[in-house]
Image (cartoon, rainbow, N blue to C red; front, side, top):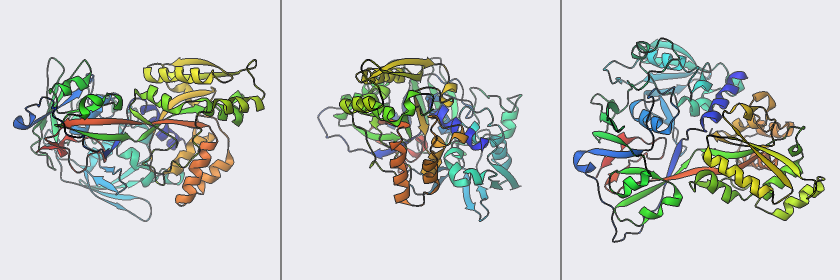
Length: 509
């Protein structure tokens, strides 16, 4: 079971730094007489986007910054990605995937080249998976997939932990994050297989790294031998030290990200289009169920839920870039529903529950909230949680951490953390299973585990979602949401929002 434990642990930890996204188109703004200045990107066949930080590495297994991920997605590719509309897989380096009756999977690689001109082979895939042990993003999948190489373009993937949930279908959300590296090129640059190649790249993507300016701007150039198609010749990541949206409003960039609260400045511009993007993750409060804690009493946990103002917390945690969440799973999960207990704020109900549990104004409940200190917005959220709870019969102490280690000890009353998606709600049983190592709340509920095991259809899945919420072991806060604003001459392509932002799919009208 420890292999599956490691898998989900990695995903939870990394989601504190990175989020995946899936989009849904939003209506075009009403035309006005106002326009923003336009770039000359169309004439130069260049697209300029913003970045708020400087990349440190382009190694797809050793990066931690969102800006690095954005660039890596253009230069490296995975075998496949699952489409967020539920319509199966989108193939990238895998030309064909065949699921066998015994659970193994036959893969045929497409005819693709790396940026140095060498051919993609099965050995490159095997090597890539073998160097995941210390990957910041992908270490959880290390050892969960085996390979039987047939020839340079054909191999079979095996899943030795399939009986513990590590089968092909359940591992797709994690395998799709593994970007394939060139074995010979990488080995020439690292002494240890787990070492980083630093600020170099040799991927199979539509773009290669052309240059980095003294000011930090990154230029990607279209790869002439790319197996697919790309329309735009140059993608420029413009390093901007101030508010990124200002560069867009000034006409310095073609494509950028906005938080909902800051959309007002561009919503009325007649040459700007806007796309809403809901990210496939959930941020939630863990509420401790360990019998040594006062929160082991479900009445205390319910009192916490009724004391909180979810909408305000979601705004504080995301600077307005979020939608309040009511389910512990995001909408991308099969059979998702919001028909669950919402625990809307009711301060009197909170106090009544605490009175039933033996607490009062003079006998208040001590609560410790743990939070990563480097997540300043989460720290602000905890301050608001403290203010909400102390209006009821709680005394709250906030403890800032410099790592995620303590989250897995279940020795605290509350904590804030983010959880990456899986499309199968059954996999959320790890949050309720003490043997998984990921029961962050320390809840012991055999009936809940039995209910997860019994999921077979929409009705049983949604009942399980409702009952999971009603344990109040996990209080969902929000689904991160953001918006892309872009020049109206830019076509984002038919697949925008289905997996990651790929500039190869964009073109100038």
